[in-house]
Length: 339
Image (cartoon, rainbow, N blue to C red; front, side):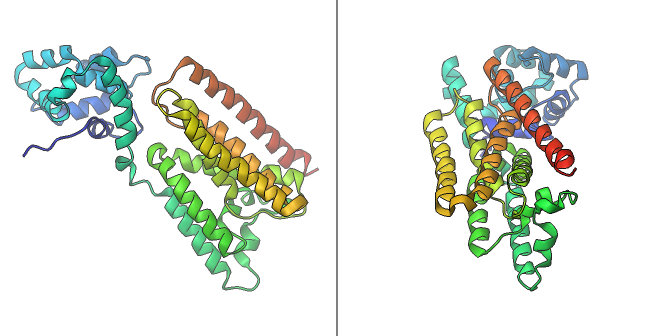
């Protein structure tokens, strides 16, 4: 029985470098893998240019679907004889008679839904969050073996040791107790892994930047207390989910998703503030900073199903705010506060 492929499967096969786009080299290699003769470079370029609607030199998922489903492309490959056999095989693998008879509007709706539904499976090789959790686990229990806590002393953020710049990030590897450790690991896997499966390396960047921004803000408001744990990165994940909703407003049911993560973020911050009184300012400011940087950076770098003008404006605005905040914090921590 002939194996049947869905649209996302073929798209990810064609996307050789797994960056979410198909360029000329990807398209040429993909077609040649199904052909007895190689397709010329100029032909591949012509095909790509024909369906590159936003003129960025590559095809996104929707543009790739337009290419595969275009009747002119199919007729052209039929006319050129044996070379057409490969592309027609691809076409038969991914399209059944019901899909051909669908209206264009139904196809567009199914494209977006299929991508969101199937992309989960093809990114299962992404394990950044799991590796991070393992490192945190090892650091905690190794540190517990020594009374002087050498790992904690070497890695935790200390506002009085700002010249040791690694501490702005490495504090995420250590935790105050078991509840702190396992709580963070559980949440970062539940919240971070779904993001990572779709958005790959970008999720670790958001986690790291959220943590760095949190430690810099913490160093301004609290100069006596240290900072440990990955809570700021987790808050960055919460708001990164909201960024996904903002970027794909027409393709997601936005209100329930945004409300869900927004309520969790606000409730947890308020709870910590009330529960610990004035002492909560340390964690509260770190969590707030992680949430802000997670939202801004999420809007900037996370994948978007279809970019609109409003979303471009939102991205540029977020980039401007992000750079302003980051530069301000760097100047204060590295120049003003060290004088």
